Length: 190
Image (cartoon, rainbow, N blue to C red; front, side, top):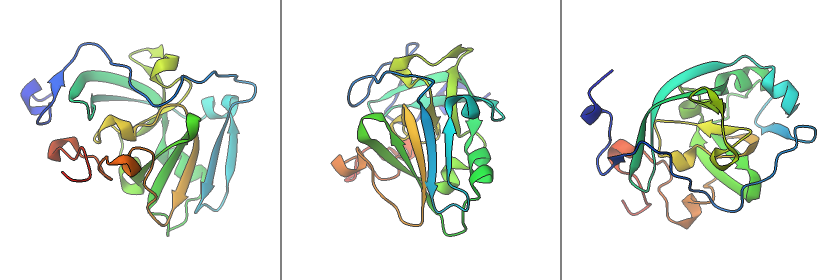
């Protein structure tokens, strides 16, 4: 593992805690009614129940995470389903270039498909050996650790594969469309 100074992007401060930041209220979760919809540029649209989602192959990812509000949390272990597994199941079409994550409270965020397909990108349900808490995205949150963490949407309910980019909630309100912490892409004017 590289030294800490090489793992923390410019303008960030390391925290031992995990600050809670999100738009809207923490939603309730009912495993009997929860579904994950996979749609858009796919051969096989899916609607997975919670039980079906949890039966998919999982893996663990060790990563650092970085928030646009200047904190970084090092040495996280997330467990969940890889985006590549969802791509395989749905048969994503060649014209798909973007993933639009749809979450509770009408939240969306956009991520290039190639970023979601990186080995460390997940749809996570566990963090450091325990289920995610509701405040941190239980039952499912995206984890795309090489981008600022607003791109790792909490409470994911839909995954849309798109041939066109569709800026999400924060991107429409001035946040950078991509959000690379190493280039300090915090806002659209950066």
